[in-house]
Image (tube, rainbow, N blue to C red):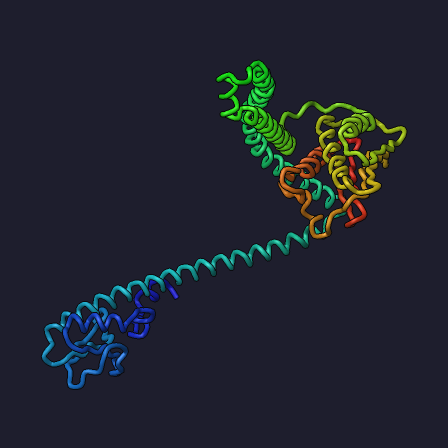
Amino acid sequence: MNGSIAFDRELTLPEVVRGLPLDRVAAALEILVGAPVGIEDPTGRIVAGHAVPGGQAIPVELEIEPLGVLRVQAGQLQQGAAAATLLKLLLHARAQVIRAGDLHASAMSTEYDALRERHEALQQSEARYRELVQSLEERVKQQVALLDERQRQIYLAERLASVGQLAAGIAHEINNPIGFILSNLETGRRYLPKLHELRATLTEGTAAAASWQTLDLDFVAEDLGDLMADCIVGAQRIARIVRDVKGFSSIDRPDPEDVDLNAQLATVVAIIAAQKPAGVALTEHYADGMPPLLCLPGHLNQVFVNLINNAVQSVEGREGGRVEVHTRHDGADLRVEVIDNGVGIAPEVLPRVFDPFFTTRGVGRGVGLGLTVARDIVGAHGGRLVLSSLCGQGTTASVSLPLTPTR
């Protein structure tokens, strides 16, 4: 159906009044006429209003086409004519809306048909392309797959570049105020002992000592110290979050260098071992003859810190809690495994552990960026990070790093 046919087609009274509160329209017309009126279709059936026996029928037309009649009492012809005019205007406006809707539907139908034809053409083209791809030699297919992977990497790099620029600006703006806030809080905490020294110089019974007691400055000095300590902890948490965000967006990347992976891990383990909870056993098992790895050592250190810290927190409070760090050389890859016998990860949670800001820990114990940062850093080195876990038995985090980076 073309647009002109849809717009010019004849409408019937039921089509025009569909959806209209016709009873309310008839009631309003009766108020205008001052007597009962009836709206009838061309067959004489009353569609709204009242029956008017012996009444006068006033035609209601739509663009010279009879649509129905307005029946009024014989003595109300003048008022009935005014009411019929008002009804005509209302039905005309309604008809314009219906025709505009028909025209829009016709246009949308035409556009849909065109889009469907294009879609079918694309499907046919895709089928021919698949037949062509299937006929290619295996070596060519491998090259196409490699090219596709490079394109995805470029796309991801472009996406992350904008995120990195935003994170860099935010991190810079947050780091500066956090630095002087921490410095000022530490300075303020060092000033507190002076209040206690002042208290010691006050002689009991003097006005100054009485004012001190009245203002309860002993409590104020003690509580102020606690408040400053809480503020310092909060500011340090903000600083740690900023560092995680910087790692997540690969900001401030240093130059790659050849490193001894065992030595890097030993340094990380030594730092964590000095802070781990009592009762947690942290052991190291390093393979001999590990070749040097070309990498960004600072970024990989962040990976190992996150993984080992997660393992330590998983076994914290469990009797016989144990965390093991293993390395081995597997052909062209170097592998690191962090194994714990902690609480494990539920099967429904495991697929989400790499989602940014997803965490199962309580408030204040993590922001959900550790594993995300670790995965992205390992991926930037051309490697893979895989987690396997059983509830109540523990978790193994496996990092595979190629000796020859692919990017």
